[in-house]
Length: 445
Ligand SMILES: [Zn+2]
Image (cartoon, rainbow, N blue to C red; front, side, top):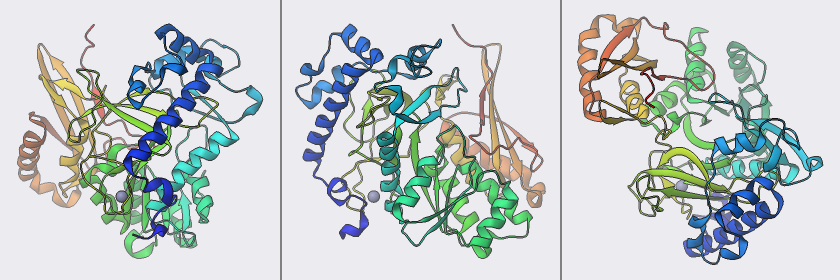
């Protein structure tokens, strides 16, 4: 593999032992910075009786207290100075140049401050990804997302420019107008959520445009939902566009920590810019070996305004043992993000993963891309209803499709379902993150 495969050849092929030393050095730097400059972190660490001098070897990292979103909200809450970032902020407010926020679907949003250098780092992290996915200066990228307060594809935009690609901001346009622009400009790549990638292809076909034939999009980077790492969903997107689809993960508070390279063998963790730990949910010990699922704990290196240190994201992940053909030493995750720790609920005493259901539904070609899962409780019994849409041309095959669905769901999830068939296009559709899983059981206290 020659060096033109990598955005940063030195870091992406660094021997594991050296990489680990680098990670420890960078962890210690950001820990010290936060301890010295953030009221929130200083209190968190003082209360736990740990200070920078206590970090002597890599294994000491696990002694550092974790933090989670609810703690960030408290630290920023009630108009604490400097507004609106409160006790987390670790630089003078004058140095903040970028504002973003989380969607706040589960409560008050988290406000994210970045300095110019922090933002440069976020785009650098995305540049690793796009370069690994084969983006080059000859690409013309179209970005069909709402350019607003949410992080979404902002870093993708700047990373594209950094690589020398030409980037077209497809902000306020509606879906039809975006498709026409992609066609007019002969755009070669784009980024969007899996839901929107599939929705755009449906809209295009209604306009009489067949994406693989009539459009030149050949690389699509997806983020915001797990679909890019679900084989059946990826296949649907790739077939609908005649393009390669790559998964990309990140969040407002962390940055863009993982991505697939052009070999599509799983998510690479960018271990030069982030420390990803996997924690056993039973013992709390780190999981270093592949094949065991645990909770992700992540640290962002070098992001100074609002450090993100040992952040418990509540996502479930596991290491993959595979060596990627690209030659990178960055480790791979198996199956991407395997669902939120909160979403993987117990139904009838069995752990249910929404991504496993998606894999089954999207693998049946007679069904549309949309589905909904509703969990209810009647007396002591949990019931799962799966709502799917049958494509108009297969209306008479309902019985046969039902049999396949029930069998496959039983095999993949060990659970039984009530299957509801709905008219094509009758289930709700959204452009943003879709909420397909609804747990309507009364909450246990
Ligand atoms: Zn690779």
